[in-house]
Length: 459
Image 1: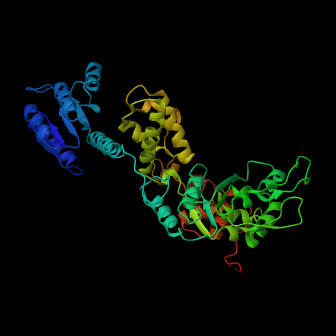
Image 2: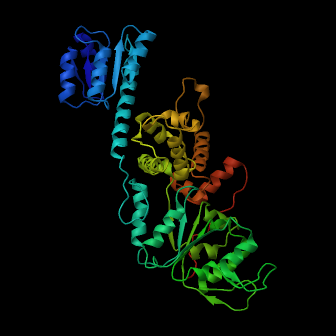
Image 3: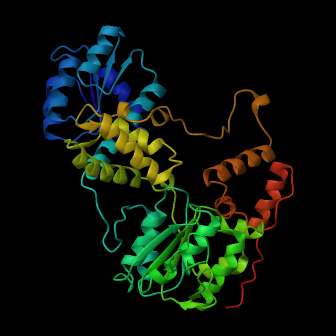
């Protein structure tokens, strides 16, 4: 960082204050500082307002014309409203007054550097990248790369796959990627949401029916299992499958035959089965809402999709990708995301995951007034979002809590963040599932259903 002040003592003071965390250089001449900015690269510039050769506001404007990506912080001994407005108009990142508070200026510089890094990240992501070998999927974080690696390893497999993840994480996109990179890619990909229709219709949709099987069955019709011959059938939200239909699905998966509604004959099929759920199926089995034998049948290969909040810079990568798509449809010229807006996007918790991000970017492109998405273009819930945090320190001893209470709050927070998925919460907390159930009994004041037996089923 570069400090500019015609008072050498102030320059030396700021160097001492800021040098603990930053590499600080200084100039007592604004003209020399401007020459250096022209030829050298700085991450942030801190300049006095009143100087003898070039006024701080003029210096800020000249720096902005040369290096608009470098945040400039103005410092003055006269904290008037006119000076503050002038600083903002000149393009300054922030405006602080003397006497200088060491802690405050450290925080201000830290935020400015974070804004600079986000700006660089946004520029880097202006051209969205589709990773090779994973159809239609975008991401570069460690957590999503693990998913990509797992998908690439099952290219030659025909095993059943269970995709797990919160709502909006892109489970159907993963299912399509599994199909498109498999040997069955030339065959059909048929998807059905098990929660989207009543049980009677669902059975007919999956297994087919013969003429006269029920009132409206005027013709014989093949179900999806037969229609997906040579391809893939995707059963979304399998955790919602009615309990009385689960034995029929289990038999179909075991025998590779289905019995249409109203028929005494079984029909063979050849299709790969991919299922998905946003529920914790292990808990569903433990609480007798999902058959254990069916769980093991569909869960040969398990793919767990990370929530968006755990994917770091992928948030900006995906946001940029959506903006480019939406801008073309809207006929708008959009450069990208302003650093302040990028900061808000990265700080938000994204309970709706990628689907919510796409919705947010659609809103932003529809409402934007400039050539970049700015904070005002984002929904209020994102603009005003403040992360929930556990407070571990307090000035008043009466505000401190016991370790047991701290553990209770943290356990509840983790469970909330993973959408109640007890298996995932147990992994994050470092417990086995039985320990988590015991702790939940203490938290909720009731007896919890014990987890699954660790004994594996017979093949």
